[in-house]
Amino acid sequence: EIFPKRSLDTLSRIKLFSEYLQSLPGVLKVQYGREWVERFYSFIQLLRIIVLLSGMLLILTTTFMMGHSIRLTMLTRKKELELLRLVGASDHYIRFPFFLEGAILGALGAGTGLGALYLLFSWIQLRFGGQAMQGMFTFNFFSGTSVGMIVLLAILLCAGGSFTSTRKILNL
Image (cartoon, rainbow, N blue to C red; front, side, top):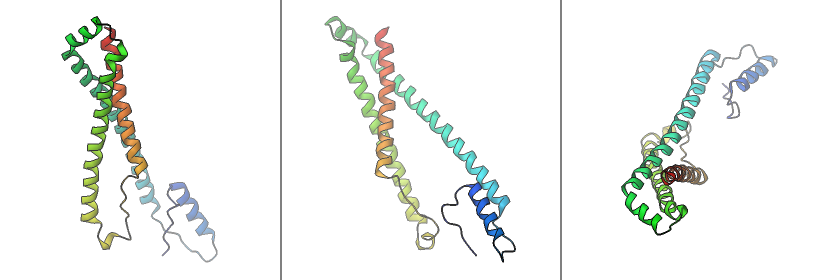
């Protein structure tokens, strides 16, 4: 039996490779489970769409939740904010601590989530990553760059949510 390389990752490449093998002299039949592969590929495409939509929903939810959290914080400190305005504080001076709070909460939230995900990853690797599975699957956690990008994205989303919320409150 011949097993395909990792470069045969799309359905069209698998079909082309199968047709190439079929055209070789001495090859009678190429079996690769076409129907199963096509159904599996369709399922993977559906999962990609679901993950993309879920990610967009999480991004919107994160931004709105942070915005409302900062808004509630500002409303509880309304008298202090009015006093700051009376003594001549600029909007940027008032807005900065809330912006910073959003960024810090974003970093803490991303760090906590990634930490929990790493614990789950370690448990799965310990539980299912034995010698019997070593040749079949590779277990890799996010690279350092990916972790940094996730934390940066969380900081930007939460800081953006707090920025829009403070802008709305201060303009009232």
